[in-house]
Length: 218
Length: 229
View (cartoon, rainbow over the protein chains, first blue to last red):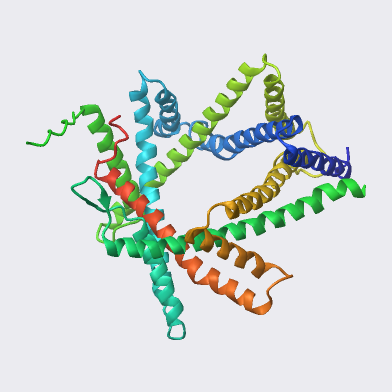
């Protein structure tokens, strides 16, 4: 089979699957379910391939299967399989303590990576951006930006005062600033929703042009 | 009347050991990835090498977890094969999964080759047809769901927050539209996105990052409940 013929088959098969997915607009149906199950199966297959070809085989060739075989390398190579194997027991009630050993390393390294990512990747750059927003020609916008950022943070403050009746109320200044923050959140979510609609629309027009009109044109 | 006493928490040795091990691993990884200038360079290098190894181990454990997940999927759908019509969908799923694996294996073995060059043409075709086409169609389908949800929101009782949400939505949509608004609406959309929306997003992201830091610090000081339950 030539590459051109293969491409033709791919275009037609892609268009048929796209049509099957769009049939969901008429309701949940047989064609949609078939397309979704093909998608899930292929996705699982590609995940498996990526895991094997990009992670497990290179790891095993660099450690367990390397020549000449050294004991420390062999032990390091088998360690993740031991911890990974222990994770299986996490789902079983009586043996879940064994699974905890597998969780330890994932939780420890995950915590360190998450902390570094949150501080270096999010907190420091965003706090710096908020400060840099103040420019002599742009003081008002900088002030709105600062008020917006701080009020959104205050909105998620759950510190309150429990009255004798048992009712929990927030301090008036916190509540007031929180209301401003709620306004900023509503505007942010509304604008993000609008951007999401626009991106979905551009994907839809691309799908119609690339996949479905091909069927009509040929 | 005295307050009822708090139930005393039982300290289990195993849980304490696991928490201590987690804290040690987290600290070594942190120190290795973010070296402290006051420590000797040799120690920093050792910590860095050790933390790199730990990250690699976790990547392999993650890969194994995915492997376990896929094998669980296969087991579940293999058990469904005798039922109708669910079994038919399971059969399609399994055929699609093993089809991808078999095609890739044949390509790697040099048995299946399209054209003269070495590119895995059939695997790429399967990726394009079963993944890219379906994913983009599903994303296109989201458009209808989003518009429908926005219309439903308009039917709800009007509140200040609904009004702000819809005003921002309409400004963004019309601001990008070639049909309506002109210069003024386009400038308003630009300002909305660069000032209030930027500020709101920044607040939300800083909040999320602060939450991650708090959870991370709880693990580091041994206050996390992972091993207590």
